[in-house]
Image (cartoon, rainbow, N blue to C red; front, side):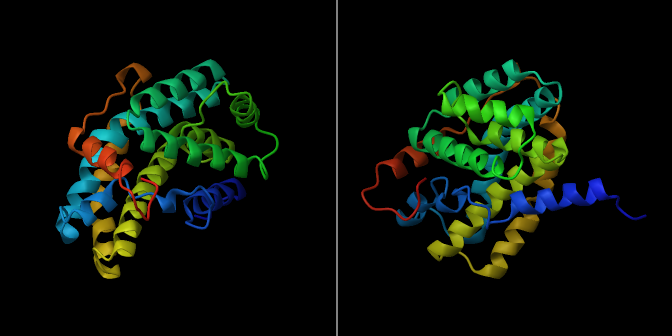
Length: 235
């Protein structure tokens, strides 16, 4: 069966936002991996898989994915108050300043870019205006949901894109640090696919009140990275 024009345009939207060429600045983050590498506390592919797995299960899934799903549903209902609420909650859950600032920078940059070529989406324009007026923070999961909705990308695909983008970002950082080789990077991405699928299934219909995250060891690593005198990555 052939895809219709709307389905083709949706898939092109997925490809555009998922492309590393898209200017969000995520390529400049390592989620604390750089600190672990410098301190020789991470060794190769097995350790990297554990780091990505814990980050998705304990942080991104129950927090960012829940927020994305709720914002997506709220945008479809034109309920902008719920979008603002999600923005505030996600900002508050990111307790590490470096991570919080990086999320805001990437989210704001994403919105600035998408409004250049999507002109007629009410929620997107409203969110952009509120960022300019400092009424919302512009955290990445919320901004990503708003942009995916504007490009008519489905909720589950939006969650998949965010989790896949995070995984590729960490793998890319590991490659640049010399921790792994390219073939190993692809093996890692493949091994994380079931985690991404399960996370989407588990968190696509949770309410904002059910947001949580708990990964204290990763929090400590991220705080330690924040204090490094010299570093290649923002986080």
